[in-house]
Length: 388
Image (cartoon, rainbow, N blue to C red; front, top):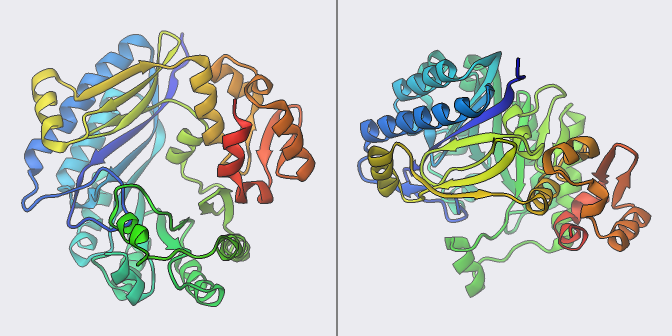
């Protein structure tokens, strides 16, 4: 019997109450959200893709992630039906990780119990800040008090809880971030995502930054905040298993590890991406980005796929390196070769690799290549030169 390939499922809900000025995700504001139409379209696309995948090879579902957008704006019955469909269409591990992203507004928090009853066992809250002025500057719709209340409620309902914060915000100092981070760590359950503020193309923040009305922290201060973040999290028992993600050992996000380990995942919904193995070939697919045209494609063809590309060994190696070196554990050379068809050493510039090893930015042994703490600080710049 063929051993099932592990599979993670990402479900994209594209709607938000408002567009945050830093956000470049595929999110859209609608006066009225067409709940029934998009619920039906998501279920139809899932059925279509399950039929296609299971005809090629058996798959075992290990995680489901409802992302967005703001998936907590979904009707709980839609979440229930999609979880039920996924578990019926794919054999699954006994306890697949099922995550739903939510915001801490009272409207969404009121639905937490219904989401748990629908099958969600991990909540991911988009808190972003515990400072009132910075919440307003980030365009968030909740207050710090609402965030704390939602965190406390989430901890009482869900077996697992994570929340996001953005740091290196304009005007932030080591002292102010340390105090906010310590407050967050005291509220944390088993997982935190802590992202440095970056300027993404096409966002409101990019326009402000270009005009000079939004000034980022100096690189040296941002690096100090990163190192301090790691140390403070460790004091509370949370390990930085990925550059921006911290967890109690054993509580790492299984779904996100699928991406960083470069394993198969299926994405459904507007703009969703997939990396899926068919007949031994890895395919990169992307759905139509705009919500209503995507729904129309699904209603007509059963799916909203716009791109489907078979990746070459070199393309796979490039992606696997970009993802895997973000992990503290690094890249397993044997898994890399199984996944890409290429030896790890053949995908790295030997001169740059030697320099990185000598400077202490990378560590390498027979089985693994990993970035050190110093290397992780410089990872973006290193990858541009290291990866062939």
